[in-house]
Length: 405
Ligand code: PMP
Image (cartoon, rainbow, N blue to C red):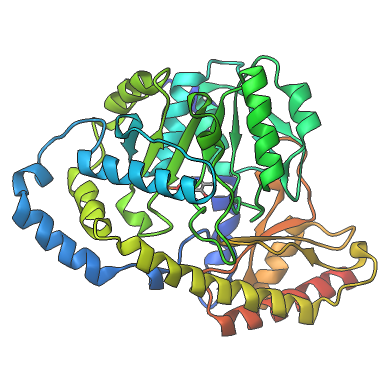
């Protein structure tokens, strides 16, 4: 008999990432890619990891290679708690993070999955920014939520729209720092208002912060969770400051939900790799990040500046913003957000841009609701300054030709 595989209904709801599909056209050799979301491999501290591998294996080989506690490696949980407390205090909001509230995860992407599993029922209302991180919506989707877009501007959420959508929402998913995809950052006033709103209404907040350390001018304002620790789940990642291939991240969760997250974690993968957790600990423990992260900031800032300068050269501003490309100036992170002239569509432009030798990600798929067809995400992190200049020139040519048609 032929096997009859019957897929679960939730499997039917899973879709290949629209972006991955779109990016297939961009994988041609020689294409300058503003499309990828990859950190620059120039920033990976290879020598430090090499030394840490030897140290981890000589110090406690059986610990590093054995099954371990689902919560994560104790010394790493302590380091995470200490670092978050220090950063938050420096930003003016003391946050006493108890290492017992830290759960080490297999990338922060796993954090999104675990939170979805414990907080979302079919039909639960989940609030997101507009646009938002597509990978989060993909993690939520199998739990069958109703994803509700909250109107957002350059500083993040529109508070009036949020207030109208808050009743019955399970949680709000928000990226206050150098958001993926827009690169925008929530200012202090908006954070204070959001924290006050969450406290007044009881709306739980899921704060995703993989890019917060990658600031270019000044450190961002204190996390939302620091202002209301019992009402927030905070997601962090080592992907953008050390290396994504290790798949290491963490959750800081209040007592009300930590035990359930831990059970979900146990069921998902028992624990994150013991070896990788110890590697990260060894690399971090003497304050390495305080020396290393500034080098990443300097590299990415130089590349952001190159992209801004090239954009300004090829797309003179000052006239009607509907007649040319416009863009924002992210204060950190990996992406900037641009908008095509009126009447143009980023999905239609992409194959033409690829023919000219440059790729980007169309912005519309990042919206849970109606997307902006003119929006596009440009990563300034992986190409060199020279490639950024050539890529923007190619983009300008593609736009001019497409408009002329
Ligand atoms: N959240 C956001 C906003 C991201 O951009 C990413 C990576 N693209 C993740 C979470 C997941 O990161 P990781 O699993 O590597 O920690």
